[in-house]
Image 1: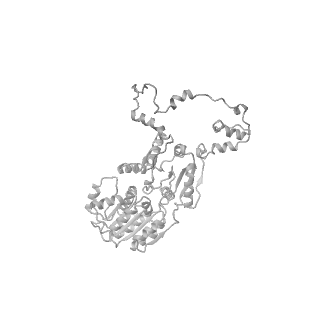
Image 2: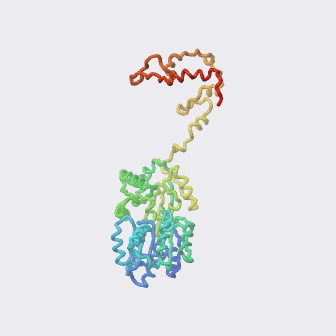
Image 3: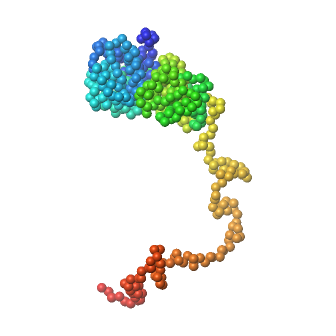
Length: 469
């Protein structure tokens, strides 16, 4: 702790560490960037060290993303530098064989994502029967990502007698329900109101048209001389396109998302931490896994559809007591999302219009053509595109004009029967003489039986009495 410069614990650490050391289950919620990782890493290292190092997995830490797994494992390595305990990370996107070899050598602490951990369970390369401490870090995020079934399956593989710790930035009701299924009388620690960002993060929103967001972001980076900016987008393709657009503008930028391999993501993240990369464009996969000391700026290029994700995004700045700024680019379609975010935080985000990027009326915000036509004064000239053809009778009824005299005169009938006669001739009527078919062959003569039937047809209706029976 002395080497890391830690002298005074944060509020979450001061309340959580004694509970963990006492062996009780813990349900802790605090703002992002307040030191939750050290809140459970320090006491579990102390507990495991008392029994010495072993070859079985005694502590399992579940996290939602690969980046967060690497971050937690780094904290375990740094804080346990002078302890004989061994720890590894287990996550997908990389070769599983090195992880299998590390597990065979024996480890005390495993930091894992649920999916890859179940892969090891299926291959029988990990033994979870000796786990003493289970930690769910960023539990709400794991629920949002659909890991609830995997988590319950993993819990079913663990010993019933164990200590359970659950840490989260937000604290929805689903977390309480999940905790009630496997935790025993947990101690509740909540150092701040739910779903609130750190007070040291200055928040501002810039209204802008959707088509000009890229230009505005490049303008802000260059005009304010931002050297380290984390930008969040909704989609992976959008992240790639934005990074390419910033590169064309002369800004060193790269993207990180789930479609990139883990070595690529690790390489890009390292460049960003070493200040070799000016802008890092990321999806929400990195919202919980990037821990950078004194990250000055976070930009929401696209607002998240889940308001809680906004808190996690801007929590990447203003960490460990440092200040930061969170900027959101808000188009007309983003206004409902920003309203939901403000309701969640119970505060208004300052709105600031950048000169030269004032938002205009989007197409769907403009009044319809019919409304424009109705709002014009009588006698005014209507635009050409707003005139629609009307039926003659409807137009005369609206104008109340009588029918013109020439329209009431009966038009002479045109005798077109001779011209239409060939097309109205019955198909079965025989023609006098041979008739050529489309193939050039003469039409066959009517069969005698059919002709006899035609001659007998009038006799059926000649009035003669038919015998009964």
